[in-house]
Amino acid sequence: MSDKQTFTLSIDEWQVVLDALSNTIFNEDLTEDARKKAKELFVKLQKELPRK
Image 1 (cartoon, rainbow, N blue to C red):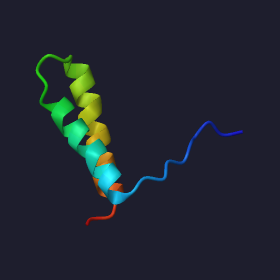
Image 2 (image 1 turned 180 degrees about the vertical axis):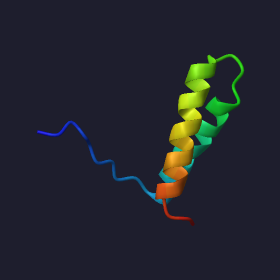
Image 3 (image 1 turned 135 degrees about the horizontal axis):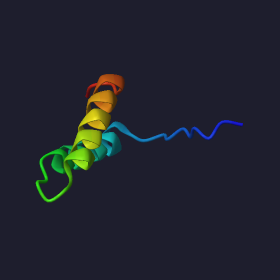
Image 4 (image 1 turned 135 degrees about the vertical axis):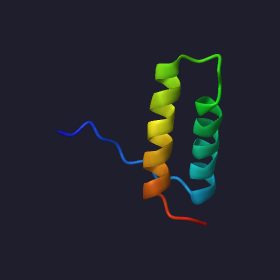
């Protein structure tokens, strides 16, 4: 059994996720590790999601 889940979101909903990650990347109150992980996820999602 796989613990991977599929999330079906609209393009607008994915944009909210990307915007939130973008804000996290530049939030100096967070640890460098947290910002690095947010940036890696942002880049990964941006590559995989279709453009508007």
